[in-house]
Image 1: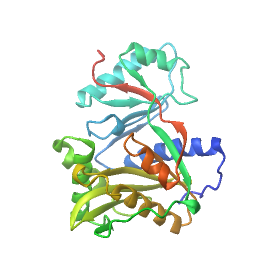
Image 2: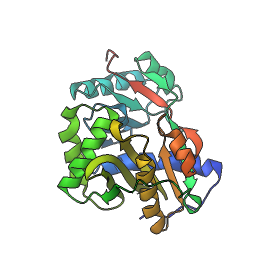
Image 3: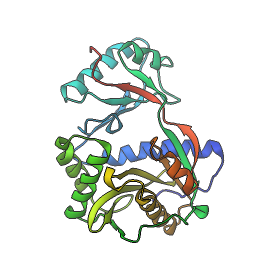
Amino acid sequence: MNDISKDFSQTALAAAIKANLFEYYQSLGRSSQVEYIDNPQFTWLVTGIPDSFFNNVLRTHLTSDNVDAEIAKTLAHFHALEIDELSWWNEPGTQPEDLGKRLASHGLTFSQGVPGMAVDLMVLNEKKYYPPTVVIERVTGSKTLEQFIGVSMISYGLPLSSETICFNLFYDLGFELPLVNYVGLLYGKAVAAAELFLGAGVAGIYWVSTVPEARGLGIGAAITLYALQEARNLGYRIGILHATRMGFEVYRRLGFQEYCRLSNYIWTGKANP
């Protein structure tokens, strides 16, 4: 387990938000269902799930002489794998320095991205209303994993054709920390999901989702809080997440504040590699 961070400075929190995400991707890369490449030129992750969150070029280290050819080659590789949605990160230390401009010339579009948020787990707002009929369970096997995947597919509008890919990916990773999943049951039916990933010294929350018919009842807040409380019980002090527009105010009410934006370049298969 990584060293637990207790640095609440704005710079440290912004860095931890991104570092946790990149370690999350590295953790996904342990699955035999995923293509994870880490060489002197690139680090990338391909899951096969048709969403730019799940297919990423995380690190680029090229020269001005070979960057365009390598970008074209990489996009062609993704396209051959029938991956037409990906995120290409342009973080500090990326080479060449004008990578963003080069990516734009190949058809990628800059995205300002979602807010990166953090909270001190010792001062969480835990007075949120828990619907008395909701039961939150940790995913421990095939049955609860199927429920977790089913809720996530519906909530994020992912095609049902991806259900098997998602199931196999997370089943392959197992059911123990640093990455665990949760489902929320309303009258015995799975209606919410969330994921906890411990990395970069902080507790990251991912895949928070509620099916449309169960929204507005506080279930999303409840399952998020449950995961954060489990992290706190393990000694973690900082929780982080990346907020969707729908979830932003929910997380603010729990005590989260925005510290950065998760900005990158998005490819939707419209380039001509």
